[in-house]
Amino acid sequence: MAGRRSDTRERIQRIALELFAEQGYEKTSLREIAEKLDVTKAALYYHFRTKEDIVASLLEDLASSMDEVLAWAREQDDHAKMREELIRRLAKLVEGQFGPLMRFMQDNQPALKDFHDRNPLVGRMKELFAIIAADETDPRAQLRARLAVVALMLGNNPQFHEETGGVAQPEVALEVALELVSPRGRAAGQAT
Image (cartoon, rainbow, N blue to C red; front, side):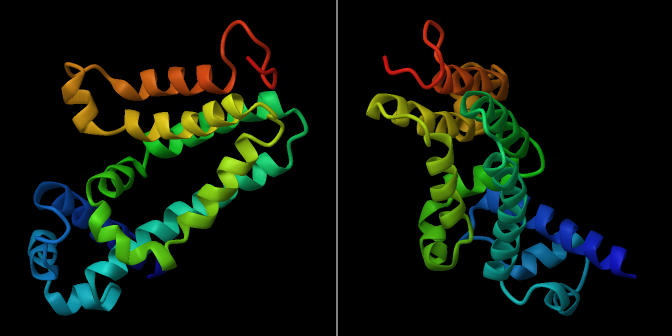
């Protein structure tokens, strides 16, 4: 029974994200989500009372996955290798199940303002930026390390795909992010 509830929860999240992407967060109602799911509003309310609850659950799921990545990164001794593997692990999150959520976050920033104080990702992103730039002393290298994370997120946005002629961008974003954390021509951790 618990598995069915989890499946329904994930289905609601997926359909809600699809509608948010098609119509925008503000223009999507719980009624429309229920209709697309072919369930009653009461059935939807059993899992989520509001659109905000749906978004909060998505953010919590991503935060939990980021916790796993951050825990792994904290245990690593070799910062240069850790940064590259950290970027690869983040790329999998961004490209995979959380890709639609990342796009939603980019496209609906005004709606997410209300979540800032209770957004579980804020602290995780701060920690991620601190970890990825931890052993860099040069401000340029610190900025490059942080920009690597941003490159992954931007490379997953379909709008960016359209602007670049439909080229598959996640691979390009990963390549750029890896170059940013360990630029060719210099050892990781070495200032330019």
